[in-house]
Amino acid sequence: MYLRTDEEAEAANAMEMVARFTEGVEDDPRLWRWIIIALHNAVQGVMVLSLRHGNGLLALTDECFKEWMSAHENRTPYPEERLDGYLNLYKKVKHRETGQIGGNQRFTPKGSEGKNIKRLNGFRNEFIHFTPKGWSLEVDGLPQICLDCARLISFLGWETQNVFWHSEDSRSVAQEAHNKFVAAMQRLQAHYEQAG
Image (cartoon, rainbow, N blue to C red):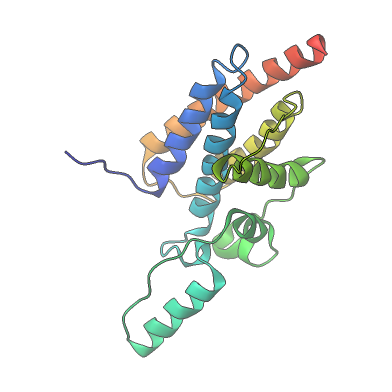
């Protein structure tokens, strides 16, 4: 038995997990940890899809990209791929040049989106690399962070032609999960505001 996956399935599955964890977060705030981790994975996955352009080189670190180009030009073995970090991928999808390669539309954050897309990365890193400590995270602002990140996903994933989905199933799964997630975050945001 094998687990078969690819970059489209990874992004779609991450979005699906975000929606699934969201279903119980009102009753169990500990699920915010898993929402943040899965949402980070979904955002990163869609940024990679937007930058792949058939060869995936733009999604790699700048150093790895140069090594690949050198290997190609010199007909030497290709180096191991090293995916660029979340914040660098985010810079690339916003960049005037790399964000528009191949007819892509670059992402231009509005309002709190830029700050919140970066905050997601910080929160995810706190959970993934948890050090010995006590930590309290105020959850009232998390729905807005999630909604800001969800707009990046929808912009790159289906509002533009930035992502060419080879699998209609992956696109459908991602989009359906995204819609459920956005609706749940809007309800949760209203609930938190009413309770606060």
